[in-house]
Amino acid sequence: MRTTRTVSATKRRELDEAIRQVEEEVRPKVVSAARIAVAKLRNARRQRGMTLEELAEATGIAKTNLSR
Image (cartoon, rainbow, N blue to C red; front, side, top):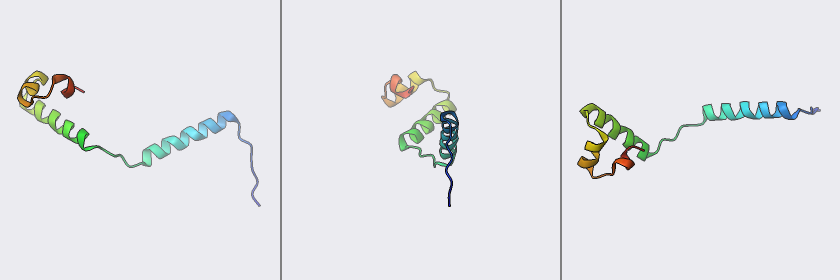
């Protein structure tokens, strides 16, 4: 036979937060293809010592889109 306990609202919030943190830690991280492409582009730009303006001119992509 199981017994049930009443948990205070404060304790329930603490438990819910702990559960959320554990779930976040064990949830597989999904990285979009766009994020990967942006990271590669950023690394390549930095390795070449290019500014965002130079990259924008070279690629035809607006500087505002590259800096996001």
